Image 1 (cartoon, helix red, strand yellow):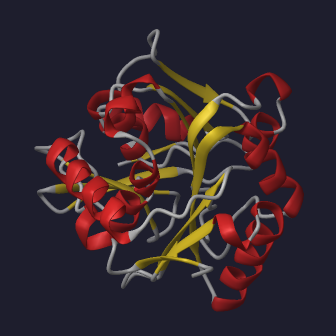
Image 2: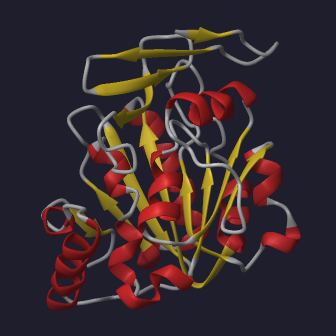
Length: 252
């Protein structure tokens, strides 16, 4: 299945293996997935790890927080934040075909008082002053059809991302690509947020490394993190206790 591309943007194609539906941008690279019988769960391991900000907030506060996704993919994060976490959720994507595919094939709900999906440029949204200081969970996953390096990856972009966050907000970023690309991206994030505010997972088998950056550094001890991880697993079914084996601060 495919949709006609927008000039200058890759076309959207879909594939299935009987249990899982995949979103592609005109290549074999997987840009998102959905388990057909559990459309509001998060299927991919790295996408689950994009929820690691939950380790740094009280579980009872989550539904009162705001989430923003830059890059929609197959809508897994957007659907999870909206449906499972009951958060005020906004997603932004530059490709109208991606949004249409998510609505048609990936069970993305229609816009409502708590859900807004915007067609737009992530850099412009990050720089939009009225949004600054309003986002508790910022999730950044911006790749083109080649998936070689993030589309937006500058110090200025990450500085705008930091401005979006509330005082106890966090950004999670999917970094996928060559080692040089990862080191460059991580360096830009560290420059903006500071080493004390940055945590990173080990790469997944597929090569995705999720990095978390806090607006305000925190230093929770192992006991606190384990208690939060168990609460996240119990409430929302995410394998958070396993994260702690492969998720570390850059300092410490």
